[in-house]
Amino acid sequence: MPDHPAPRLPLRQPALLTLGLLLLLALALPADASMRCGSRLVSTGDREYDVRSACGEPDHISHVWTSYIPSRGWIAEEEVWYYNRGPNQLMRVLRFRQGRLRDISTGGYGFHPDSSGSCRPRDLQQDMTELELLARCGEPASVTVRRRGSSGHPRNPWHGGPDRVVEEWIYDFGPQHFYRVVTLHRGEVEAVERGERHGN
Image (cartoon, rainbow, N blue to C red; front, top):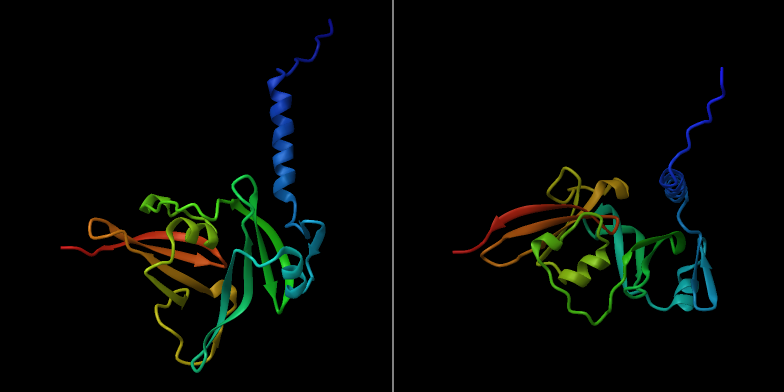
């Protein structure tokens, strides 16, 4: 039988296959272990003092609540630092536990600190960082820290770990709109729900 040459893939298909492999590799990469601040490098394991000395004050610090003590309130186990490097670079998100840098990752693109921004109900999106939310919409009308599945504070000392505690932020858009309940977990927006409308 005569030999038949193997069918050739169109040039577009190898390029798509290569792009797909690169995307898979990017997704498989772990969080960054270091970050450059000017001429200095900070790495996981560094102290808060060393990171602040190298990179300056963060643009925002949020807390990850893990425990509740009736006489003291909610206790934070983790601090999340955000560095906004402007609209052409991704924000850097640093997580500290017990005074040591444990994780370095990226958020969305940064922004000009003096930009006023606008906030509409549709601007509240899942996976926004806390800093992005504050920059676009400002401080919420109300903040509540609670356990998942519970609307009140524990009556006795309680420790459930960071996966069990969330913050609820309420943004009120005026009497013509339903307010929005934004649930944050570990410094990121986990859910956005519609509340009631307060108006005449």
